[in-house]
Image (cartoon, rainbow, N blue to C red; front, side):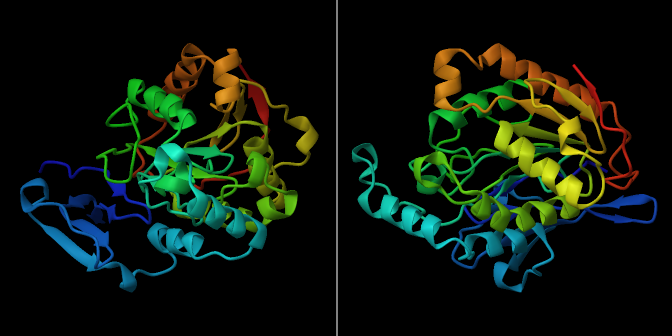
Length: 305
């Protein structure tokens, strides 16, 4: 039996999600597409024969797409919501023809992902405009080119939610889901968003690796582990580019692909390529995802380079 495609999770609020159901010891060929009624489904010629469409309003909130809907509807941080709305109303001259998203940005990727990428927050005229993580700005261009070269993305560009981009084995989220003024969310705003990341870590049952982009993402993830009692001391972990920590899932660090970092040479394409080449080696050296293991067993926190 031919395997069903592992991806797609596409669209601002998760337009499509393909999944596979397993029977006892046997893969069952069932694909499910979940989409809001207002979204046009893929043409039949591009769909699997046993495609089933389910209206989005019937989705349980325990699912990843249900969680994305909660993120989009979140109103915990009035300052951030005002900023998102103001940016969407005023726009940038180059994007006056755009209908800005202007809301919290949902996560994006493969629901069977073995790698989670954790960024900082949406850019005001990037993801806050397009409605998809790392889409429509130079940081996203830098990131998706690296993911494409490493085999995690179907194309090297990410322009809009309908550009055909698909991720494989990768889920992209952020410490904060709203574009913050000056790219600086407050500690309280980051804490307000943390439960969404905690829930994603529970729902992504195949996770083998977390890649953090920048120090704030690093601190956010470690705070979750500390709160869960999975690490003893935050001070035992020091952020550095391509530093790997022996946790479950493994933790791999990278400088954030911000325009400041890439334009100054602090982060080069070769440096980011090295991160995702190492990521591919890590997740592909693990057992098949069908052999489910706890995502967060006790760990020693050993650090390697």
